[in-house]
Length: 105
Image 1 (cartoon, helix red, strand yellow):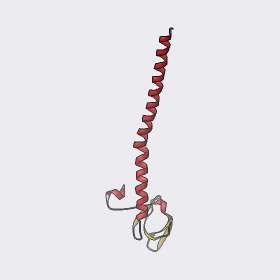
Image 2 (image 1 turned 60 degrees about the vertical axis):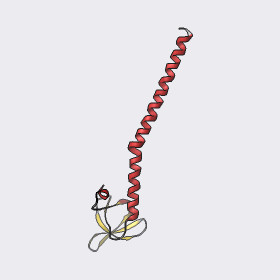
Image 3 (image 1 turned 90 degrees about the vertical axis):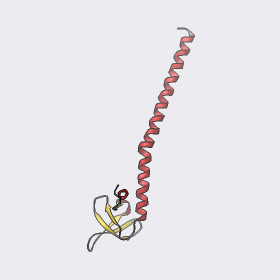
Image 4 (image 1 turned 135 degrees about the vertical axis):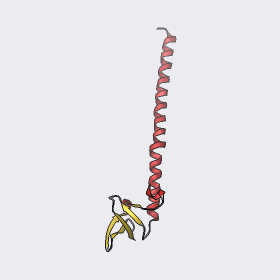
């Protein structure tokens, strides 16, 4: 093989590595916009909804228990689940219940 043939082979190998790198970068960008970004946006909305909860709001726990907020104690919430029956629940495990479509999602 002459030197011209060797130079062409090296150029083709370099092009393959660049196209492989470009595909990996494209996959990372696609993964970010379709998986990571929407999830972080949803978590931010849930956090804002938890901060806006107040006494009397109806909520559901992560375990499926429905109740009404009776007292906010910082990181925990006193939740009335039946008349004269209250439980202490971590604030991070409750979700608001609403009649509007956005709160249900």
